[in-house]
Amino acid sequence: MVDSLKQAAIVGIGQTEFSKNSGRSEQQLAAEAILAACQDAGIDPADIDGMTTFGLDNSDEIDVMRSLGCRDINYTTRLPQGGAASVTTIVHAKNAVESGMCDTFVIWRAMNERSQYRFGQPAMSISPDAHSSTFLEWCFPFGAQTPAAWEALSCGPYLDKFGVTSEDLGRIAVLMRKHAATNPDAWFYEKPITLEDHQASRWIIEPWLHLLDCCQESDGGVALVVTRMDKARDLKQKPARIIGAEYSMLFNHEIISDFYEGDLISHDIAERVTEKLIASCDIAPKDTNVAMIYDNFTPQILRQLEGFGYCGIGEAKDYVKDGHMELDGKSPLSPNGGLMGEGYIHGMNNITEGVRQVRGTAANQVKDVETVFLASGVAGAIIGE
Amino acid sequence: MSMRPDPIQRIDTAFFWEACERGEFVAQKCEKCDVLWHPPRPICPTCHSTEKTTQKLSGKGRLLSWVKQVTPGAFGFPEPPVAALIELEEGIRLVSNLEGVETDDIIIGMNVAVDFAETSGGKAVPIFRAAEAS
Ligand SMILES: [Zn+2]
Image 1 (tube, each protein chain N blue to C red):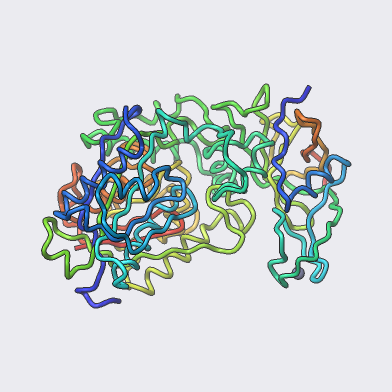
Image 2: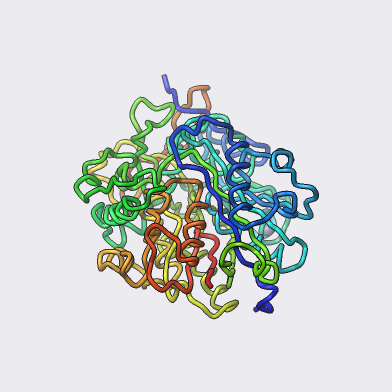
């Protein structure tokens, strides 16, 4: 582990409102979110010297610099694998500042994926040679054309093997909406659902996913500022130290279309990330106080809970049913309502919530939080005081 | 007439779809180490040879997983087809369709055999139907 003064920390968080029609450009959403994160931290945007976003983000680094008046960037990178990039950004930010390459590193993700285009619907214009999209060639002519279809196809063997019912999945959706209902920033604020609502919602993907098993399509922007603890001490907020952040990409595995390798039962990549986390910081995800786990679709929560070691294989549906992920449970899950309840800014709004939980400023604050686990399938991070 | 989307074809993958047009179901194989793989790739991941050939497959396999993309409806299909993940007896997997089986009768692990379906532009893709145990 690095010297505590050289350790990376998240010192600023920023976001726009989460809506279905932002009424402004993605570039503006990006700039507003980054500016908010800098103001939260007490940092001048001119001092930003490193940045990353997702391969799928439409805002160019040049335009971000031009909007915010950034002078000189030492390091930029863009991350593959769709929303799995969300926690991967933390791995890169940590490396960038702890290596000394950057002092003020910014992460952003901004999208009008409801009003400008539909992330959940078949995209006719993606080049099969583009990043993260060669898999389309093998799915599109067979009518598997949406993220929900790919996800359900890859999770089917797991759900079948352990007899996971639609009610089991529905309990996850009900929990996310319960948390969102008391979070004023959530799109579904004051709109909880029942298991009956879940069961009655229309089919998206037979035989596994109802509408309420799916995250939202949202407009909005989210940003983070990361620096080292030696600098963090002079800033406005209580820093959220990045205690561990690990990533794994395994041979022949894809992300949402992960069909070709392994037994399709265990989450091999999450297991590997967990091993790396324990080796690097001696903390297991299950020993943290809050679980911010990427909830694009309900089955993904079950598979990640097992992959990241919260429970044994096949046990996740009962782990949820037994109440461990309630706000007063052993491992509260996404107190903001997650991507289903709060908004879907490609996972990044789950990271800002993790920071608020460490600061003690969340709408649904968990008691006595020392550490929070952030996860997006291929990456996991542990942040804390 | 089929409205099914034509396969996207790339330099490294066209051989697969061209074989389908001839009614042949093939996988890529390394000339040197005899290993089969799918999806296709330009170079053998084991020995790094670029000398590739193809092997005709038996077309027999079993169903690992299936879904029906109901909302939004599948582009190019009047009714949502059953998209299926198939494991072939040669050990490789691919996404395809299961045709001719009512959804109530689908069983994970059931035996399937290859057939071909025409696409809107007169190309062909492999699909699967229920088969007796081999
Ligand atoms: Zn070889």
